[in-house]
Length: 235
Image (cartoon, rainbow, N blue to C red; front, side, top):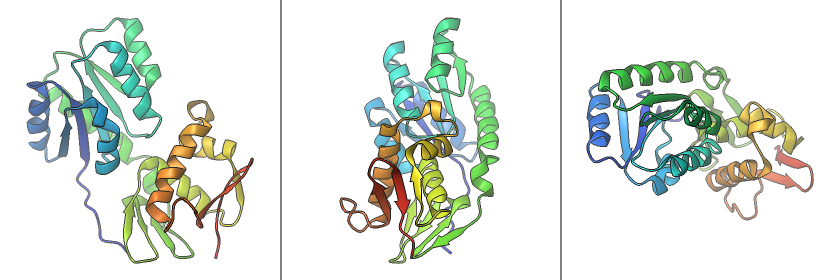
């Protein structure tokens, strides 16, 4: 079994506000949370891929349109809770933010105690999700530990997986050698197909191959079945 990576929840704060960004970091660290601050919104996705947090707080000094664009781009890649801190938007604007993918909206100014309470609630809700009750599974040289979001590789190394990568790989590993259609994967990985599209699925497959394939450009483990879907090579 791979080494336990730790159970302290990690929170990624995307904030270019010079005052409140560091304030949130300090406040949440006092609550024994693992907190990472990213001041550049253009680095949000690569920072998420590196850190793999359990929750994201977005608190940006930007117009509404680029904030919503960031939310949509991140939501297309992950399932974790998003908390948006923003000025007093109109009801229509807030509804648009929920449609873009946020899980909660807090109108500024926000007190540290309120933000702490909201984060604790969403972390508990996220921790009780279906990923934690998935069983360990082994196929060939791959061994998956869902509760730790960890994959044990053939060479003895480990790969840390995002929620979407874990959902995709777990589903394929339960059907080794079988062709799984794109439509089926879209529904199973995202939960409901209306939120997914083929480009999103290809992006998750691409990232997963980079973590588990010896040669991602010529994959042997996750195979593409042209015009149909994907297949996990069985041994």
